[in-house]
Structures are given as C-alpha cells and as structure tokens.
Length: 189
Image (cartoon, rainbow, N blue to C red; front, top):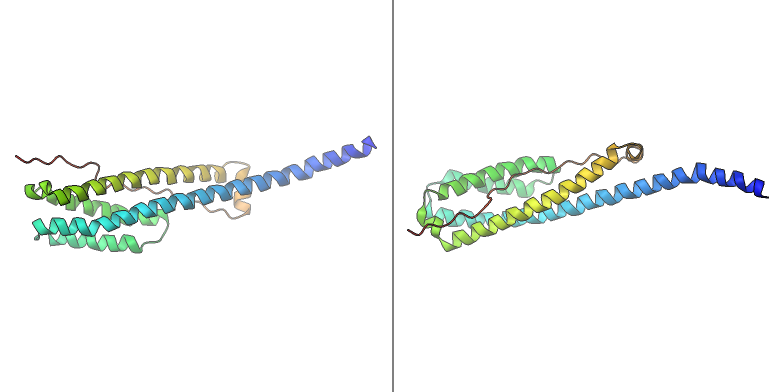
C-alpha cells in the first residue's frame, strides 16, 4: 500500500506544484496590476485638483497682468488638453509637462508684479498649488513604485513566462515635474 502512495505523491509534486506556482504568480500579477490602477486613480484625483486651481490662478494673475494674454491662453489651452487626455501615463506625461512649463511661465510673470506677489488671494492659490504638487509627486512615487514591482515580476524568470502566457502588458512610469516647488516669501517693503 505504501508503495502505491509514493507514485501518487511524486505525481502530485510533479503536476500540482507547477499548477500552484502558475496560479500564485498569476494572482500576484493581477494584484500588482490592480495596485497600479488604484495608484493611477490617486494621481488622476490630484491632477484634477490642479486643473481646478488653474482657472482661479489665471484669473487672479490676469487682474494684475492683463497684457500677458498669450501666457493665459496657453495655460488654459493646455489645461483643457490635459483634462481630455486619457492615454497612457507616458502620453499624459507629455501634456502634463507642457502644462507644467506653461504654469512656470505664468508664475514667472508674477515676479514682475510686486502687488500681485503680496496679494493674499494669489498667495493662498499658490499655497494650494504647492500642496497639490506635493500630493501629485507623492502619488506619482507610489504609482511608479507599483509599476516597478509589476515590471520586475513580469520581466524576471520564471514569472515572465506566466506574464507573457496570460498577456500581462508592460506598464509605463509616470514622470512629470512639479509646476511650483514652494511659495515664495512676500516682500511687503
């Protein structure tokens, strides 16, 4: 009787262990992919928050620097493009980086207007933008960490075989610079 059990155990090890490995690896890849989706949702939320701040920021600056119409139009145009862009993180990073550049130009305009730099409404909007940029960067780091883990699992052997068998696609990192890093000190002198 024990002689008959040994082949069953060997059969179980040879057949069941690989099946268990495939199932466990597949489930890990699904979980990592879901973490990426969740992390992207966090980035998307923060980007929308940035988009909500931009019209108020533009309106405030426009009140002081009405002749900088080109800068305002570019920021407004890029904001609309970013809001409409639902592509991959790499595709979205392109338009986001353009928006960041335009926001930096808008904030550079402020340097020419000391009264605007001291305006409490502007300073509050700028603080909110800094806070939002910090949140975007934190969400971006979390997202990119999940993408790194997923890519490592998809690209290392033997899990790469299972990833390719089940069609797990490569995920892109999201790299975008902050539009503003800190609120400058207002000089009231």
